[in-house]
Image 1: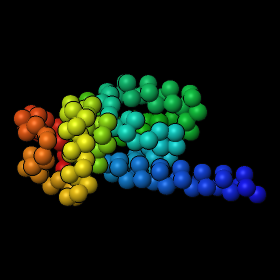
Image 2 (image 1 turned 180 degrees about the vertical axis):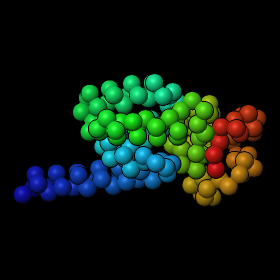
Image 3 (image 1 turned 120 degrees about the horizontal axis):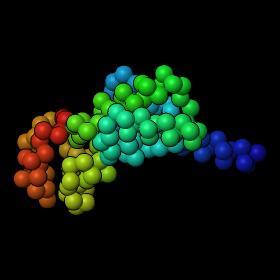
Length: 153
């Protein structure tokens, strides 16, 4: 009985974690397929920090399917379209949901600046506009200004 209870508890914890990760992904066509096929093995930050083109996302999704991810050919196309739209080379960083790795890697902030941004967001709620981000103590305002075209609020 105990092994069954432990398996059930582990499954419940994974389901909650995947649900939390799903909330961090931008809404749009294909999100449901990405959540089902990708978040089973990965957390959202593992791909949010990447900015790949269509061919590279297609190759990466193909590799994941080869390794056991469950997605039909049609679903793979939907996944690639979602990833290119939200995490392609010209995609903006959704600063209100972006994890540490995405802010640090894509925007080039230091670990300290990134932690300050997340702490400020957690304390004060979502950033509404660039000016809100400029008010974060410990973040270089010149860096914020330089990256403003890459930000989505």
